[in-house]
Image 1 (cartoon, rainbow, N blue to C red):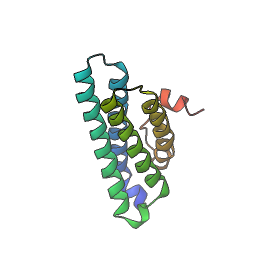
Image 2: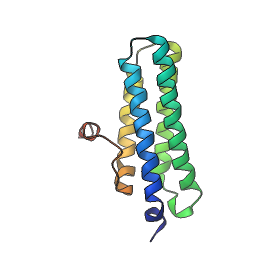
Image 3: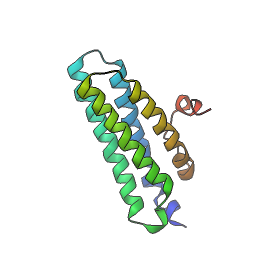
Image 4: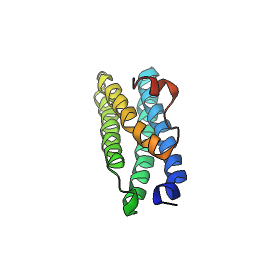
Length: 130
């Protein structure tokens, strides 16, 4: 059993949780009318997503055989997405860039999902890749 197979269950779990939180951050940002609720909830989901992705990335960095460029790309895009969510909330401007960065996150998650043989993306998200 190689390292990726050994850690696939925990990495898959973290990836699925993190994407769920990222998805909820985006949905809350776009679908919530109440500004206070939107700010508190979207920022909380973005923080949870970042935390789960960070745990995923740190596990990969502590095991040489798990140190993959796909994981580094993922962490970079997660940081960009979460920063954009928080910037949108702080400045109360158009969420266009949050949507763009979320789509880029989906594109970055897909190869990681394939590598781990898991389902972190919804069918609708996967359909946007075509």
